[in-house]
Image (tube, rainbow, N blue to C red; front, side, top):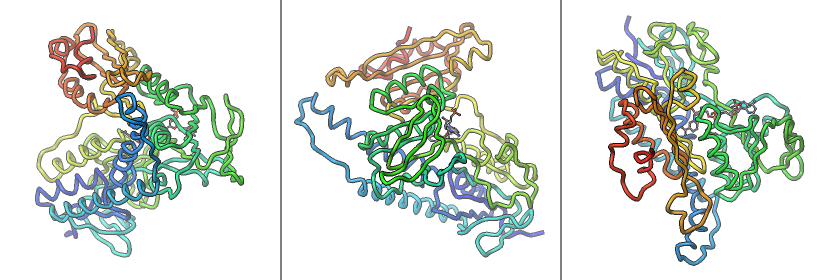
Length: 446
Ligand code: NDP
């Protein structure tokens, strides 16, 4: 039987793009289908525009701190529309670059809504195409709990297109997206109330990291409501009224409310039931080679809900291409994957948390340090940088490295190489520091 394509990738985000280009590089005839802008969550409505907003939000602090270094006070105000438009333009530029890269790689781009017709046939808009192998890389979408008035709440998707800056925004959730947007909006000048159902943000991170991020956010003026839930949202003349329950049992009137309460695989309308692809806990079930329950259908990235990070989706996509078209079967490792939270203060991490190490019955030695970064010796601000190493007591292997503070992501990326290689604490100790820097503390902790 002959097919239109050797591979059809569904979804032109990080995973789909990487898999399509790599498969084409092995000589496969490849098409990729996308219903929105090419680039996916990361490029279009995630990592990229978010990081640009983070950069934009940092100027307010820098302007204030410049005075401590002898600069005259800076009077400046934000043109929200300008920032949003500039970011949108950049995102569209990047999307065009990805389209160009697809063309260069010889991958055909198909536009339209995608739904399975049968095991090897997919409808893309009003066209039907067939493929020998199909890769599902449709990503995820924000999840909002079903409470009255939830349709009035924004998700991160809409945050990048708000025409007017909210003067007061409520952020619901305590995960990556919630803490990042709380910091962004505060830095850009909005009043921020963050509603968290636990007593600490960033569940799953090392407890010290959670506490330091939270303390830093409080210091930067985020109004937290812990152990609190939103019961309903109602429109009122002054904006939106949130009825809160739990520790903060009150009402709160804001201009906008952002729900960052997790993300779910984006499987609606895909017609997976027609091809009997197994779904487990709302995600496409796959093995380590990204194979679904159908031998010729594969899935990578957030729609499989393994580790929802862009570099993981790219890694899974390339490993799939190597395995299926490059005659080089391989899968990626999910151990010691570094990640960062671009909150204010920033946090980054690689390896085991202290609690995870103890849960594995490992005996650990914990090294940690907390200090005011040199930059703030003149500003006098009570800013803290925190660093922590988790070391196996018997093997001396560094099991985890965690940090809160400026440039944490940049620093942990380097440390992650050492941790991934199995470096021991004595290797860290034998490394000469770069002075004066924050990063040197990772090799001077005793
Ligand atoms: P997370 O899963 O990280 O956090 C969700 C938050 O919402 C948690 O605090 C959770 O609380 C809370 N929550 C869930 N349901 C409810 C509810 N019904 N009512 C109130 N609170 C609720 O999801 P995000 O949306 O922040 O991010 C999704 C994923 O995207 C992340 O896991 C990450 O993989 C990825 N991402 C990565 C980034 C990066 O690398 N910098 C940036 C942004 C996203 P609880 O802890 O109690 O469950």
